[in-house]
Image 1 (spheres, rainbow, N blue to C red):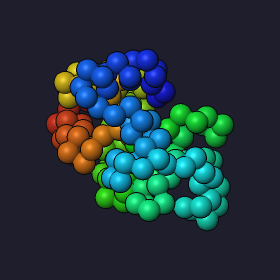
Image 2 (cartoon, rainbow, N blue to C red):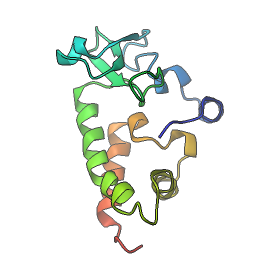
Image 3 (cartoon, rainbow, N blue to C red):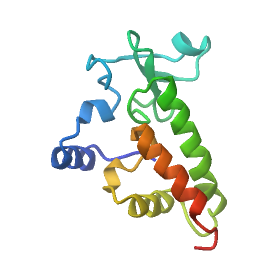
Length: 145
């Protein structure tokens, strides 16, 4: 789900968050600038482009193979694993209910449950604690809500 830059900048300004970090262009660990590189540098074969902070071994992919819009902030291994777990809990809700609910509506539901602004409700922007909250919310939610 792509996020509007103006909306994200506004939310960042309001909350004191760093727009460049949430867009993957700056590393949240060392605060250095990330590089826009082919994912073959990390995976050994290409899955498209990504933002990479080599010193921190932190990275994030981008939307579609031709977009420079990141899927969130760069992350080290532990956070990447928590984000995968959060998606594993959330995606069945977002995908299984597609006949009645699209992905955008699923994220809208999640942001209301978490009490966060729309522009910041993207698992690729979440911390470990927010990922844990996603998992908790999704496990407690009855399918027929």
